[in-house]
Structures are given as structure tokens and as C-alpha cells.
Figure 1 (tube, rainbow, N blue to C red):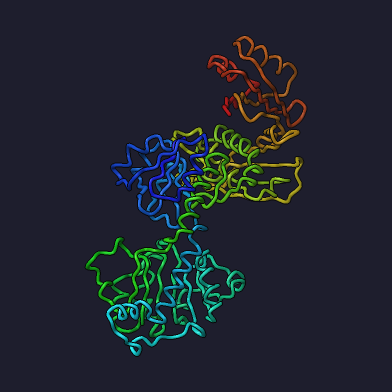
Figure 2: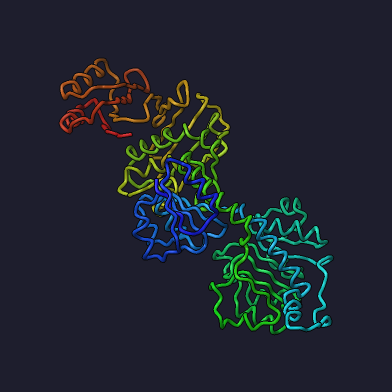
Length: 532
């Protein structure tokens, strides 16, 4: 498997990749533009990048084998996540590597703003001694507003509390109990932070909700003389609005490590602002952070490619190696149930309902199993390259929704996985499965309410027939005449002499002539051939 390291990372991270005999590691000597990357990634299975290399849609589409992109760092703005997901490529970052480093820089910015350290230093180098110009303020007793309480925001909060500050935090995913555990006041909306904070620090990704959230309207709601720190993403601030707020005095000072366009232009108006501290995107620029990020990037790539472990993925739920081993037996069962329903259901299914019962309801993460069901259901369509990463996105684009339920209702089997297909709230068909003896022996044991025993692979012949003597012999004779061997058989009926369901596992596809004979039999209906 070819791994391309596109940007400089820690030598220890490269060494971790190179020591795996399964990998062919190519380390690029310089940053490559999009056009230069296209021929290089044709046979790449994995890419490792920092912030320099842009993994665009064209790059992703030029790499048919690409399974994973590892970002040595937190932000993934340089990776087209939507294109990666559609392509079936998982994107993983390394949030742990630069958490402390970025938190420390943010706090350095706070201290520098409070005490005018950069300006004072500049005057000293100029031979001056202007103590009166640089009277600052203490952090103790002030309120720090934190926008974004992920890893970095939490670390900043800890340091602020240690300095005697009060912390008020807003994050759309933050719970009040989590805020209290950190020692912060929970803000249910961002305006509470604007009204209360003496200092505001930003630790949010760029999304449709956060882009340009710090604008003229936001500055107007803030305390007079507020100070702002941004070591997250430059696009969160409307730069011209910040300049206006600085010049009016509404914002007493700001410290920025990130900008809307990087590198910052030589003639950018920011460079003329006296109450503004600027650094060239130094958030992760420490020896420790670079080493951690490089090592972590190598580890997440290796884990995913060799064991299926999903760590720090931005387009796939977390799945560690232990959890993967627990859900692994359910994956072929789920996929087989999906395939079976797809081939038995009439067109137009718009909802898949997956029920986990028995021990299956205790699985720590059912998402991979649900994805396997969807992958099986969509595998019989004309769609190309549907896999675990993009299957939910593909289903959504087709108008196919999925619902999951962990059921406490008593079931006949220790493990129970049940799948139903609906169209306009009308159930089309259903199937359920379990394991016989061990997790290595999955079986489909329920089909449209009838008990069956069907293996999860092979060619199936399914039909409804009148329950009468001689029907099994008749089927055997017919298949034998067409040289089709029966591997196994499952029979179910509603009552003696009533309607029966017959499922035959065959060693080969039945010829069309044989199927025609079956369909002409007055005692046989609903003849279907299914491939699992």
C-alpha cells in the first residue's frame, strides 16, 4: 500500500510508517500544487498532509485507491471533506498533538494583550524607556469568554481559572454539566458571552454557522474595551469590522495568529494597527507539537489501514480496535440482510429500519453495522464505489433514510439483528439474523415473518408454494434435470396444506429455462433468485 507524505512531519512519524512492511512510503521533498499532485496520487492508498498541501476534489478523484487522508494537526480546511466522503475516503486529524501548544499560545496572547508586552519590547529595542505608555490590566478578577469548548478551549479554561479569571463558555455542543466540570459558566447562547466577557478567545472550526460570526453586530454587543484572541481560524472574524472596532476603541486590543488569507499580505491594514498583535500561524509551531502530530498521524493511518480502527475521523464515527472486534462479526450479517432486502423489495424503498436485540443491543457502537446494512442494500444498484465512509451520504442523496433502535423486547436468539424496508410507511419486506454456535457462523433466520435458515453468502432460489406432498421432490427433480445442485434447503409454512416458503441455496445460478418452468407451475409463485 502506497503512502505519500506530502508535507514535512516528524521523522519519528515517518519512521513508524516505514517500519511497516505493508507500506510503501514516499516522502515528497517539497510542497506540490494541485496539478503536480495529480499524477503522483494515482496509486496512493493514503496521504499525510499538514496545512500546506491542498487535498482538493481533483486530487481525490485522481486517486481511485485512496482510502485515508491523515492531517498532522487539527484543522482540515485544506481537505475537501465532501469530496473525500463521496469518494469513500476517511479523513483523520490529530487533535491531541497540538492541543496544549495552541492553548499555551492563546494564553500567551491574553497575557501580551493585558500587559502590552510586544509594544513595550519594540520600544526597548528602539532605545526608549516609556513605562507610562504601557500600563496594563490584571487577568485576575476578569471574565474570559471562550467560544468553542473542545480540547483547546478546555485547556485555555483551566489556565484562566488558575490565573484567577472567571470563565464563561459557549459551544453548541457543550452541556451545562460539562461546563461546570471544567469550572466554567455555561452560556446557552453566544450573546451571553459578548455581554459578560472582558477577554474573548476563539476555538471553533469554520462552519456555515461560525464563519464571520465576529462581525460588526457582534462587536456592538460586547463590553467597551474588550480584548479578543483568535488562534483558531481567520475566517471566523470579519477583518474590516475588527479594524473599525479597534479604531473606535470598542475593542481595546486583539491578538491574531490566523487570517482569512495566509500568508498575510504585506500591505494588509492589520499591519498598521497599533493595538493589534500578529503572529504567523504559530499555533502548532513547537517541537513537541510537531513530533506528537507526526507520530499520531502515522498511528491513525496505520490503525485504519491494517486493523480498521477509526480514530479522530472527521467524516466517520470513532471506532477503536477493541470495538471493531466486537462489531466485526455483525458486518457480514448486516450486509447480507441488506442485500437480501434490496433484491426482494419492490422499487421505491425510502426508509430502512434496523433493530438491535439480545446481546447486539449492548454493542458500544452500532454505526458500522448499520453502514454494512446500507452498503448491502445499495450494492445491487448501479452505484459505483459505495463503501463504509460514503454509504450514509449516498443513501441520503437518494432519499433513503435509516433508523436504528436498540430493543429491550425479548427475542428468541441471544443475538438479534433485524432489518425492515419501507416505502411511504408501508413495509415492503423484512429479514432477521443471528449466529449459530459462534460469531463466525452467521445465519439469516427470519424472512418476512417466516422462520428460515439461510447462509449469508451464495446463490438463493426463493419461492412460495402450496404445501402439498411431493413438492420437494418435484423441485429436486427439476433442478437436477437442469444440472443445478442444491447445497441446502429451508422450508417454512403457515399451516398444514397452506402456503409455504422454500429457500434453496444453490451451487450455481439457475438457467432461465428452469425459472420459466417454475413460474408456469400453478402451485408455485413469487420465484426469486438472490445473490448474497
